Image 1: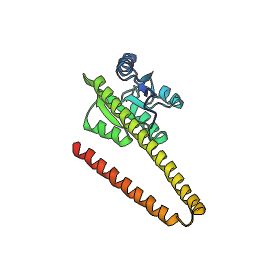
Image 2: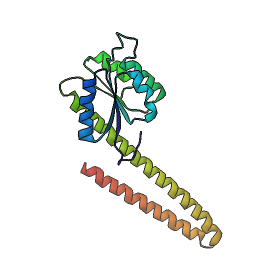
Image 3: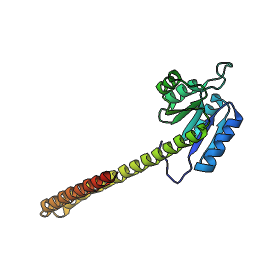
Image 4: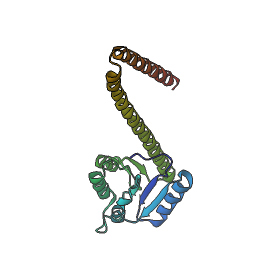
Length: 197
């Protein structure tokens, strides 16, 4: 989900432990400047999705096995069904390849085991997603500019054909030559950038 880079990232944290929510909230707000909202259940989180979060962090174990409430994987299934592009990072003290595979098949963006450094790892994942959103927004902005430029270019061609029909063939040759030079310079610059990496 793309958003302007100057706006803070909106993050929902879903965990049945209030202390865990506060630890994650403090870390993301103080170190990444995120706007964090915490929810003690999947149901509460789903009821607030009209606020359009940019990313959701969700614990796998939400007491779903012991109550009639939704568990983390059930919430993930609902999110993927209704919000397919919303990033959802799952975390849990329960580990193992079967659990990770299960969550990834349901559509989790990533999984972080709830170990000693899990808060730092969650922050790293959130930062990565934020950078990805900024890049996606930049690409979409470039696409819009190019589309507008193409429309203006085509419109100007038809206008020139009406105004100066005798010069139109020469104008077209000049325009295509400029496009060729622009593409060549762009590819050359891209090649230089790639060689530096």
